Image 1 (cartoon, rainbow, N blue to C red):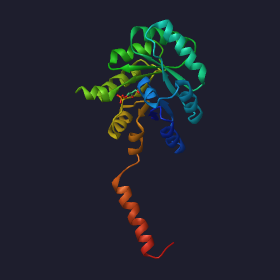
Image 2: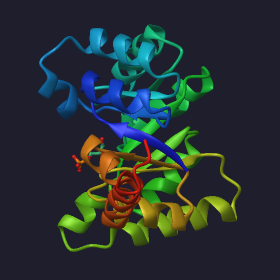
Image 3: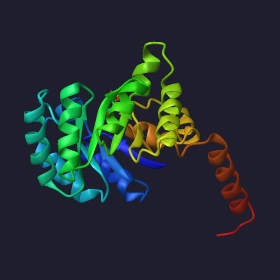
Image 4: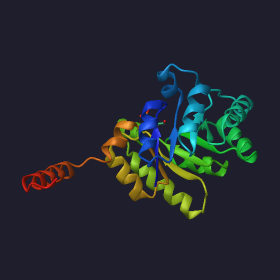
Length: 215
Ligand code: G3P
């Protein structure tokens, strides 16, 4: 499973990329707005830091405008994947952009029928938001399992990008369900490394080594 960061914060991206474990980055308008910087400038910087797919979202809601925006975003860098929302106009734009060879991440997916439509429209990947489903007492991970099964049944090439991840258990379950990509906040990425027994074990090894007078 590919691991992406869900952020527009360059410091976080730099740190994760330096570990050699980062496969890509997803952004959305809320994340970019939070940084208070020019969208284009942030995207270029991220594309130069990470040699992998970098999702950048359109903010138009009408087909022609989305296609135009998508083309402009794709021109910024070869790593850009254009994000279109899962509305009828978004899927019309997805079909046109995909036909031009532009990779599209269809975002704001909350149901298996929406995912099926995104795949049929030619999306490179679809982003089901599992945390937001959990937030309303729905089962986000059940949606991932349904979409993975549907895509396998019909051999769709569209990848399942597990989004709106809130904790490491979401990452574990995404991998068990066969999600292709999992995007997460930097805090969750760091949590993936942690286990108290690792810290206790390392402390003991080094303590024993020191007590034996080894250098
Ligand atoms: O970037 C899309 C998605 O991951 C957003 O997550 O935490 O705002 O529900 P969240």
